[in-house]
Image (cartoon, rainbow, N blue to C red; front, top):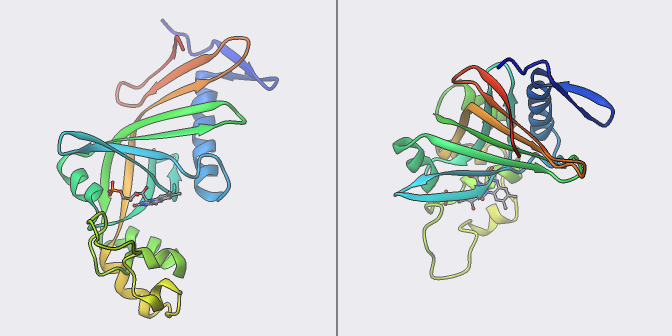
Amino acid sequence: MDNTNDSIVINNINYTLIDLEKDCWIRLVNGAVKGRDPFHLPAVANFSDGDISLRTVVLRKALPEERELRFHTDTRSPKWKALQVNPAISALFYDASARIQLRVKGKAVLYFNDAITVEAWEKTNLSSRRCYLTPFTPSDFSEIPTSGLPPHIEQEEFTLEESEVGKEHFGVVGIKVESIDWVWLNHAGHRRAFFDYVKGEYRWMIP
Ligand SMILES: Cc1cc2nc3c(=O)[nH]c(=O)nc-3n(C[C@H](O)[C@H](O)[C@H](O)COP(=O)(O)O)c2cc1C
């Protein structure tokens, strides 16, 4: 059934499936560039030792052409190792004022010690670099409540030059998006659409 020409009206604007898919990526790009955007902090899930593992991350980049999302992480973290074993990954976004949820599924690509990580690291500020300056392994248990950072690092009393060692643990996780499940909550009836990049199909769904 070719239903790509059917459209819905949101805030007096007509959207076809093609328009909605474009709108998803506009929202994702805004989420990456605007710190206060509701899409800035998605929950990202993957498999880890047969379990589901879920956490909040900062959306750092959204690339509509490449259909890729990126966040930064410590390469010593459990998620990095688990994604090497199983790259299946999912990200959840919700914009409460727009009442739009996106459930993104894809495969993770792990960038380390390459042009992408170098560029991302160079744009990272001192405060963010602190995360990569612990000598300990992230997610390990500790006998005491601690940031895992030496006091001068914790107080941000270090130079950009001194922070360069953190690069050793700095990784970028790319999510190669394979599908987006879009839901719009509306008092006059919700709407749902599914954008499947693997099958190359855009379809309406029953919410
Ligand atoms: C607001 C917020 C933003 C976060 N951003 C990131 C991030 O961009 N990358 C990251 O690795 N962890 C981030 N974290 C920490 C993760 O949620 C998680 O606690 C940590 O990465 C350990 O996850 P893991 O044990 O699954 O590796 C963030 C936490 C919060 C509360």
